[in-house]
Length: 250
Image 1 (cartoon, rainbow, N blue to C red):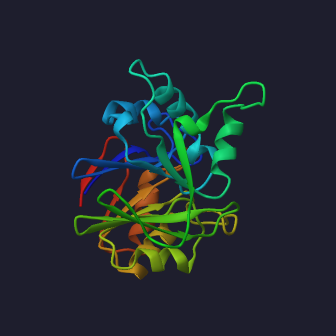
Image 2: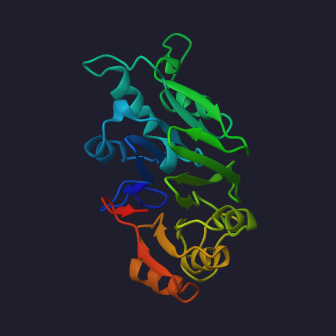
């Protein structure tokens, strides 16, 4: 399984990166985790967006889902016409309404999202998407939010989405090969149940026994080297910062 980081900026696109978006590929299949604002252009350059097998959303904040409105346009109005089969979009309850509202659907001007997307609510039961097995777990965030575990070809990764410290993330990550964990905050007084600090990301990966940690959701005003150092204080495995275009083999 191959991971390509499309965007890793936290909360909003940074000068260096789009917001959250991660491409997974295995045996000719492709799966996208989150599609935050600014991510569709780099995704378009990285893969055939008409051949995607599914989108899996962690939650419905703009920096994790809003470029679905752009993907709708790109798929529906492609010169070759819209794909014959709608693209599965797995997400929290209310995903269809969230994207329709963002696209400004009205009764007088429907967007016919169902021509392009097939929306599927997350459930606690693992699902198969081509060669991928996808399992989600509800995590701690002000809105309905999920961490996502993806397994294929004997490899596995867990993506935290956005979360405060919680047992659900550690439990989902146990035995995974890679932790793709957010590190929005630095040490200090921070809001509760919103995001992880880099040190908390490291502690969660260590508690889960994951040998590789990739810090992501990096907010533009934080010094990434400080994030890296603070994560190192709680985690002694292989550690790196996510960056746009980074490719990781699992």
